[in-house]
Image 1 (cartoon, rainbow, N blue to C red):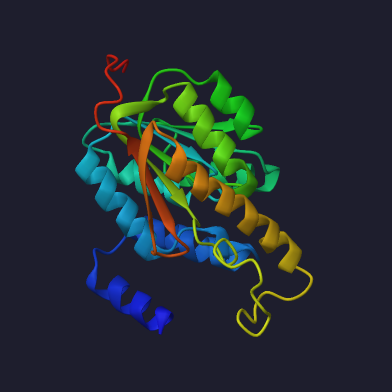
Image 2: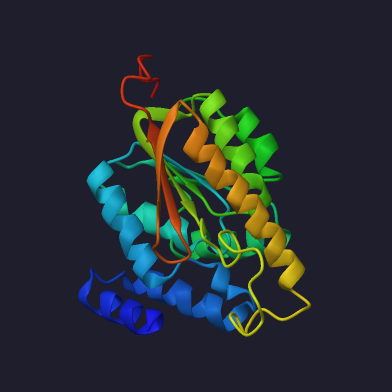
Amino acid sequence: MAATVTEYCTAVSNDVSKEMKEVWAWTCDSFRDADKMSSPLQGATMKFLAEWQQPKRVLEIGCYTGYSALAWYESTASTQAEIITLELDPQMIAASRKTFDKYKLNDRVSLIEGPAKDSIEKLSGQFDIIFVDANKEGYEGYVKQILDKKLLSPKGFIMCDNGTYLFSSNLNVRSTDVPICDNEVRPYWTANGKALRSFNNFCKNDSRIDSVLLPLYDGVTLIKWKVGRQTYVRLN
């Protein structure tokens, strides 16, 4: 049923560009873990939000093959937003650079290599959109670091993917419930679920922010500064 609903929603929503479809198809053909990539419907959602937000700077934590960076690039043509994307995996770094070169994104997209924690610590200024789609055990630390450094602009938002990923609400899912999750990979996803549950609780209880966890895709968390919390001057 969920797949049918997703197909229908995709069919009646804004389509993604030819270029995004090409990256999607190439990624699915080339990488066994292509399920880590945002779906076409999620790509359309990201473009919708960016066109509405009109950001001047975008930060994404986790680049994979550059599909989401391409979405941010296309949807910020009117503002010529600076897009900074962070990636650790050498294979994904090479894939992302291939995407950036092929579609000529390098004028506004910068890829920073290395551990996200270290890269975030070196960032300055503020970002209007921050997209987090990386190692799940890092989410809580990344978002806390962003908030502590005030990298999120007063009117900006953070979008975190996979907030309900398989085990985050039920740590005892059986193989019969999720047939694709066999005994070999179940410990990995169980650990991710525990990390995401901790992250969700952090978002709920941090007094600086408002957050909502939406039952979309694998769960999407939206975070903004609590109204009246931020009074400092925008830096960018």
